Amino acid sequence: MVSANNLKQYARPDVSQMTLDIIDAIKTNQTVQFMYGGKDTIREMLPKEFFGDFDGFGGWTAPEGDGGEWRKFRLNKIDEWLGIPIQYKVYVELNMSGYPIDDDVSDKLHELLDSTEPVVYRLKPKGL
Image (tube, rainbow, N blue to C red):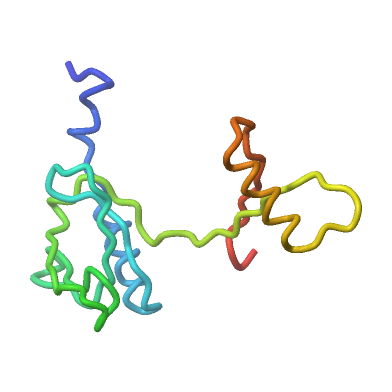
């Protein structure tokens, strides 16, 4: 019997979804994120091609020309698939009175980040 704690090691990412995400990333020149080879590090890569009979994909570990290296990854060795990252805008709300200027807002943000008060924010995916 497989316990819930050990289930992750048996559950493989969906190869069909990975393939579709990689095709979309190649067409739109976007990165994909995934965990590979038993390491707990999230890798980010700009895919450029498939190899074999869609056995894996190759691409740059950083934008081409920015010091990245060309790597190839086999789909059957991917431990966790995150796909194309969603870009977000983060909106932080501050309660202020009067007529604050940029320096007042900056000071208030620094004060909030240095305090133990919880930060209240909203996430909104870009493009929505």
